[in-house]
Amino acid sequence: MNCPAPQKIASGKGLVRYMIHMDNPEKFQYSKSEIIGHNGADVESYFELTATNKLIIMKDIIRYIYENEVDNYSDFLMHCIEYDDDWFDIAINSNTLAINKMIDAVWQKKRNMSETNFNKHA
View (tube, rainbow, N blue to C red):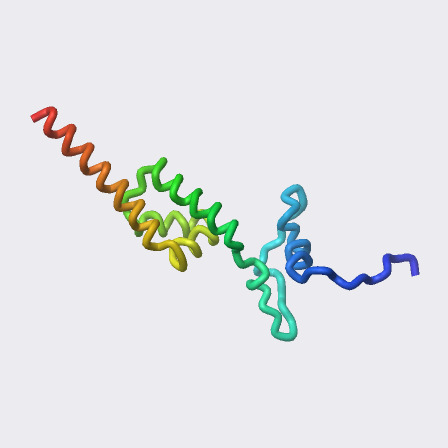
């Protein structure tokens, strides 16, 4: 037969990522939902965020909240739903307190600035 010999895979996670071209943005991107696990394979477990990835995403979230002056948690969650599943996962499953504190701080800052501007013009 004129074909490559089958080889044992070194990493199930690497194989799943390879199948959808996750690490090759120049190739066609298949959807994770198109992968069908057999014999009880939990495909989603191959896409769980690492601690490093969670930290990077959390920094991106905090930066986004600050730069866009997000002052409402529900608006932020709707943005996460529309923007990125990983952001939504982080927002509802971990670091909720830190995110809420950041949003509250932005709200307080905006309130204090509007009170200062009002008092200057009064």
